[in-house]
Image 1: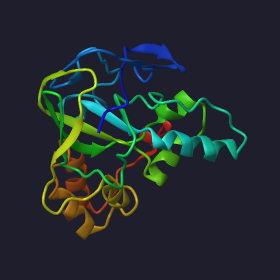
Image 2: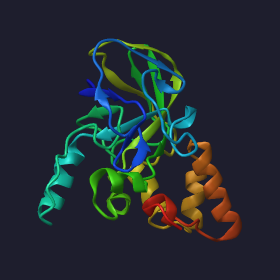
Image 3: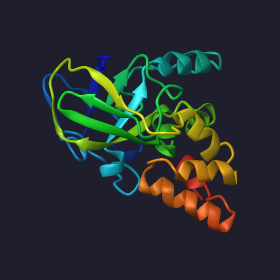
Amino acid sequence: MTVLAIYSGKVTQAYGIETAIDKQLVTGDIEIDEYGIITDSCADPKHHGGTERALHHYPQEHYSLWKTQYQALDIERDWLPSSMGENISTLGFDEHNVCIGDQFQWGEVIIEVSQPRSPCFKLNKRWQIDKFSLQMQQTNRCGWLYRVIQPGIVKEGASFTRIQRVDNALTIAQVLDIYFGDPLNIDGLKQLLALPLSTSWQSTIKKRLETGHVENWNFRLFGHP
């Protein structure tokens, strides 16, 4: 598959917050290191970016679904690729056919799916839609993140090819159904622990299993306790 578009961005003040969600189209050859595209920035390194969340992939198909959903509610927005803060935009890959641990060869670079995106309140700010982050979480249209296994150069037009899938793989949608949809399902959580999920997701899963409690999502989703 050919990646349709690649985006990177710098931290700015926008939508009443400090964010790098507004990303611009990148053309030509691209250098990717262990933290992602070298021209890309992150406003909140505690919750975004880093080696386990180096690149964000968002299916381009979702934009037409969001447009249809919100137009029915008389909410007009420009639903254009890059608006979710993604780095990679494609057609054909989505949460139902991409699995945690999938590895992709992209030019010289090899990347591995590390976790679904955890929607946060900054999406509400960006779209000026209350509870948009919650809608994303409930519909599983979250996209996903990568760790970089092999840094290198991606030449313009380089193919994007899946080269590996782990045993007993779960799709992004299946992981979201457990993690957000049935968060204290013990058997489901144990299934998730067997996957090469990011350290932060693994830590949260272990804590749920140990305590029998689900962490509070309000700050992440809405920006307040």
